[in-house]
Image 1 (cartoon, rainbow, N blue to C red):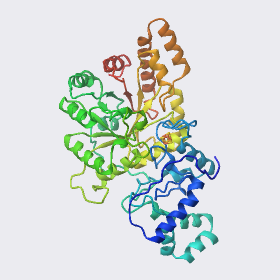
Image 2 (image 1 turned 90 degrees about the horizontal axis):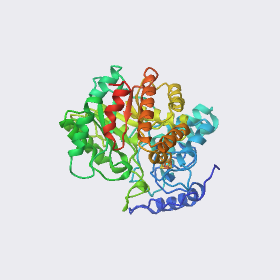
Image 3 (image 1 turned 180 degrees about the vertical axis):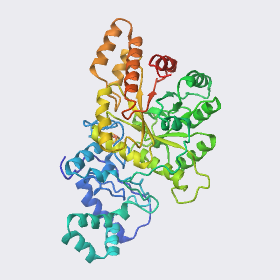
Image 4 (image 1 turned 120 degrees about the vertical axis):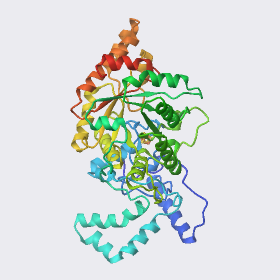
Length: 480
Ligand code: SF4
């Protein structure tokens, strides 16, 4: 990719209604004249170009500011297949330039007060604060380390406002007492099994309740998705409460796509008060997958990493994002999704590392059908020394038919190996595809278990509506 990226993606600039001085308006016009043609600038007013190897991340259709989503591939963005994944490009260039660790800093969501406005005024203001002489000396006459320090002294206060203060460090959870049974078992070194139950499409809870009762004896925790594929269903917190009432432990999933800052913080307090102790933060599928009429398709208010950062600080530091104190903070075990097969294993490992720093204590991975390939990703995590800071549960989905197998080859972040496709084709021809799918799931479950002492702590079964199969997989794979 060339240094400048003129007109790569036309998107409307963020132009809010607000009063600005004539000087600010002149500066804003100049900025868009210069940065628009060079980098496709949308005037987000929260410029990150110097952190992202001079590629503007606001080209991402989800507005991700902390790295790629789980659908990132070297070929294209999964939301708009005519475009490259802009975060793949950013990672690629950053690794080539040796600037990848710059991507580790947890960056804030957009400050909407600043969108549409100029950013150069902030830079000039910072230079004045630091003193022009000091800046010139630091940038021109000093060694590279001091140059970087001066540079950071200018830009860090601009990109990290008081209310955020993101960094690249690991923050150990404050309370070591397990918040949930899932956390207790993982910390005790047990190999755990969790599963997913699809929330109902109506207010009837009969099937949901019977599924919870069916799987409860076989798993430690049950995940409830949050409008998966951007398609409305019963909320995750309502399903979680029903599970608690039936004596099961839920993992409440929260998709950033459907949350504002206020909504997220209020919901987590409510969920915690209702007894929800495990929370899994995901960015969420793009509304492009949703049925019509679709919601806003070009920007999320938050991403999964920002959610983790906010929730960890609510729990461990006892305050809201706006700084108000929380007298009784939420008690939660924080998790995130991991994607071993999206983009490049070393890119994904960096992203997973950032999630751990932001607050992720456990990962549930996207579907894994190739354990050997997953090992490459595990090795990348090991190189980053993070395997002792997070519990990893590997996701599997039993294949019910050849059609489903073929469908999975197109799911972003899923890698379907050729031998499995061949097995399912042969079984389909013999009228035995469903049983073959179960056998493949059993083999995968046993292989996952064999990694127990090598960074893997559990299995996460996602049956996509085939909940009846869970007891058989758990029993026959020897995981009960
Ligand atoms: S694949 Fe995901 S991260 Fe990459 S540009 Fe598309 S939406 Fe953004």
